[in-house]
Structure formats: C-alpha cells, structure tokens
Length: 162
Ligand SMILES: Cc1cc2nc3c(=O)[nH]c(=O)nc-3n(C[C@H](O)[C@H](O)[C@H](O)COP(=O)(O)O)c2cc1C
Image 1 (cartoon, rainbow, N blue to C red):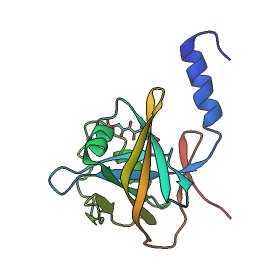
Image 2: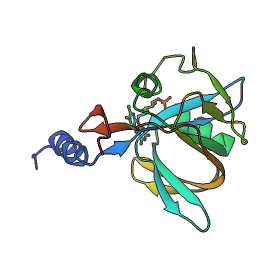
Image 3: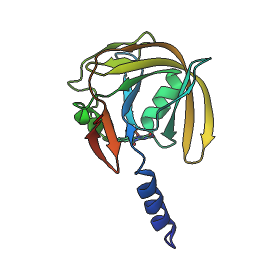
Image 4: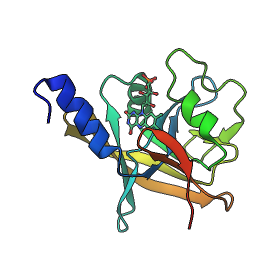
C-alpha cells in the first residue's frame, strides 16, 4: 500500500478492479424529468422478500433524484451498449438525448435494447461511507432479449466468453 491516502485509494481501486461486473443503468422519474446513472455495484440481495441493492456516491445528483422519486428501474446492459454506459456516467450530458425508452411499471425509464430490467421501490438506504447502499424491493421484472452482457473489468469494457 502507498504512504499517502491518494496512493492508497489508487491501489484500492486497482485491486477491486480485478473483480469483473456487469453494468446497469439505474433510472427514475417520469417523462418530464428522467434521471439515470451507470452503476456496476448492483447485486441481488434476497429472494424472499425479493431485494436487490446498489451503492450510490453521496455526491451523485442522479442518486438524489432516484432517492426522492422513491422508486427506480435497473436496466441491464448488453455487450453492444457500451456507449450507453459511457453517456450515463457523463456529467453535463443530456443523457436521454436520442435514447428510446418506455415507462416501467414504476414510471422509471426502461431503456430500449436492454437485456433485462428490475423495477423497484426503495426499501432502505444504509450508510456506506462515501456511498449510500440503496436496497430495492422488487415490484416487477423482465427479460427483453438473450444476448451477451456488457462486462466491466479493470476499468475497461469487454464481453463474456463462456
Ligand atoms: C461502468 C461504471 C460503473 C459505475 N458504477 C457506479 C456505482 O456503482 N455507483 C455510483 O455511484 N457511481 C457509479 N459510476 C459513476 C456514475 O455513473 C457517475 O458518477 C454519475 O453518473 C455522475 O453523475 P450524477 O452526479 O448525475 O449522478 C459508474 C460509472 C461507470 C462508467
């Protein structure tokens, strides 16, 4: 580990980057003010009751919008949706510009072309250091198409090879 906090943080990121994840876009809000951000901390939590979770940076504006909406839709990205992952992590971008979507049962955007989606109400928000751990109670879900997932690994994008 490095001596300074900055080096320690870089080392920590590097180590954690060796754990591959999928990528989801967590969305909320209706047609007039949709919000959404790319997330790779998504995980399943419980089958009964059906719970999922993701970790949100406390500084995230999109997370503030999701939290106040009280509901969100998890959009699981396919291997051909890297551009969406990048746009939904970009500050200052109009993230929904040119992106087709329809409302999930909660009203949150269900993005066109995703592999699967999970629509939730916020069940709990736990302290997670500089992040908050959002636990969602699943209200509806679906599979849209069968294709390979978008994979995030060591800071870059890739595909799943069985
Ligand atoms: C692949 C990928 C995974 C990400 N995972 C997370 C995450 O799990 N939690 C989080 O808060 N931000 C994550 N981010 C960063 C957010 O997408 C980004 O900080 C956010 O969109 C900033 O804009 P906002 O202030 O409007 O939320 C991720 C970004 C990328 C590209």
